[in-house]
Length: 111
Length: 114
Image (cartoon, rainbow over all chains, first blue to last red; front, top):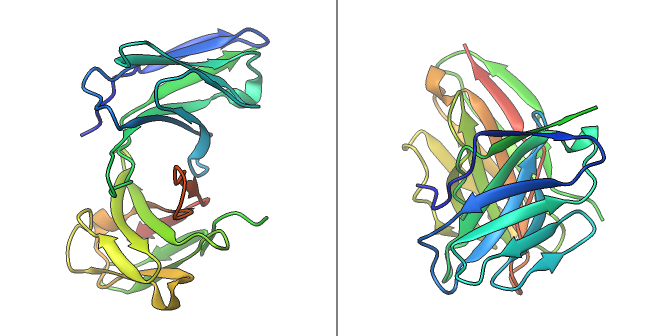
């Protein structure tokens, strides 16, 4: 089962920041937080990942709380093309790198 | 650099027939994964190859599914015989065998068993 909890849906206005929360209270010390998204029926697209420090790339920022029990994915200026299902995934440690997907959050960006 | 490719993009077969799905990983990626999403369910892990070896096949649903990766390059996933409940989208992903091993997904193969 997925080790994360996400709201089923969120709305955001185009041009505004989208903040997607994720709870992962049982995360272990060597487990990373990964974010993927799935636009319509395409394959999951990698967005960003982190361990304990905040991370930023050209797509998004990832804010991880100090106790690592929750995180927030931030899309700084959402566009209509960012409408997708966003998955927060805690990737198992060791040599088992399989991803366990939950239901994710359907983000709808409105004009 | 080319991404993960999958063939075919769509397949419609009748119950009892055989279907073979193919995945070509990103060049140089030793890790290859198969996942699938069946109707109304979450995306589920099927198995993981490291080069030509099966590292983890705990997600394979039953012995009607056979995955191979001869030579450690492309992989095939054969379903024989196909059943109605096998309908869904089959995704392949690949990653390097060093660093954080981020997985990159292909577009998927949409399988419909009638």
